[in-house]
Length: 149
Image (cartoon, rainbow, N blue to C red; front, side):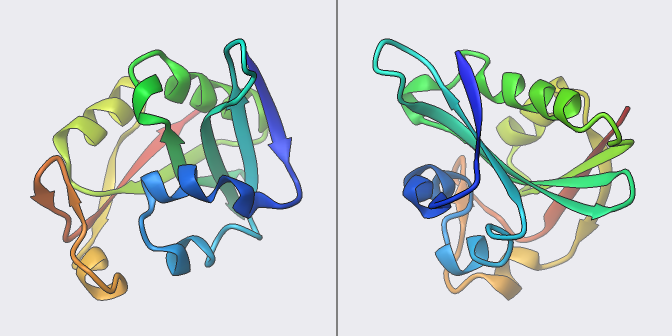
């Protein structure tokens, strides 16, 4: 297993990015100002997971996008990326992540040490050009979770 930083041609991973954020114009809002990391594994050495992180202020970062290929989920790749981020950013006192109100996603982040912080009402209905569904639930509010070091 190898995690590498991607500094150029980040859109090469658009397929993975769109798994976590299904509107490309929303990805474009953070992709270039964020740092991208790709987890490669297996005999083919192919990308199995990715994440994009932005520095929001001194000691505060936000996980903007994290995705694992559907056939590779539940193998620890997402958790491995999150653990890597805290090692990679030793000055990170707080990391935020915004997500929808899907139980499986909230459960994943809580298992990685995140706790609910706040919500942004109507985020998905106000900022996306189509309804977003996860686990059969229409996403309306953005749920922010945070993890403190």
